[in-house]
Image (spheres, rainbow, N blue to C red):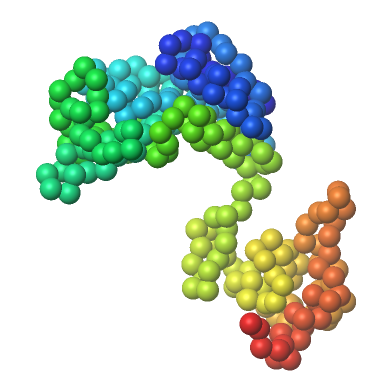
Length: 264
C-alpha cells in the first residue's frame, strides 16, 4: 500500500527523508491532502482503515496552541477524513525541576523555550503544554505520539514503524496484547482452559488457543492421550498446518500426570 505525503511546505520535507530510508515503503507526493501523511491500513475483520498523521516539531505545536491552527482546522480535517488520526510531535522535552518551565533538548543541551525558539521570547510552562496535549487526546480523541526523536530522518522512521504496524499482516495478527503473565491477568478475558494450557511445557499463547479450541474443558484436556495432543493444529508453516507433535505432546501429558521433570 502507498504512503501519501502532502506536497505543501512543512509536509513535503518528509519526502526526501523517506527516499533515503532503508526499506522505504512506496511513497507519493500529493497536492491538497487533509493531513501531512496518510495511508490505508488493515483493520479488524479485514476492513481497510484510513490513517492520517500530522507531523509537528515542538515549536510548531506551541505555535498551534497560540493560533488554534491544529484544533481549529487540522484536527477537524483529520476527524472528517480518517478512521484513525494521529499527532506526531518531533523533539524531546521535560520540565524544569525548580520552576516547571518547559525545557527543550536542542543541539546537545537543555534550554527553555525563550532560548530555543527563534522569534519568540515566550517562556512556556511544562504544565500548559501537557494540558494542551491531554485535551487533544481526551476531548479531541487524537492519538498523540511524542516520538522523542530530533530530526526528520528519525521522524520518518517513526512514521514508517506506524505504517508497517498497520500494513504488515492482518489486524488480528497483532498478538502482544494477548499474552498472560503468572498472575493470569490479561487485556482480554481468558478461559480457565487457556490459562491452564499456558502453564504446560512448550505451550505459548498461540498453542494455548488451539488447545482451548480442541478440548473446551480441563476434564477433556486432562484425559486426552498423547495421540490426541500430538495432532492439535497450532499454526501454519510453508502454507501447511503445523501440529503439536509427539515429543511435545508427551511432555504435556507427563506434566498433567505429575511426571514432568523440574522445569528450569
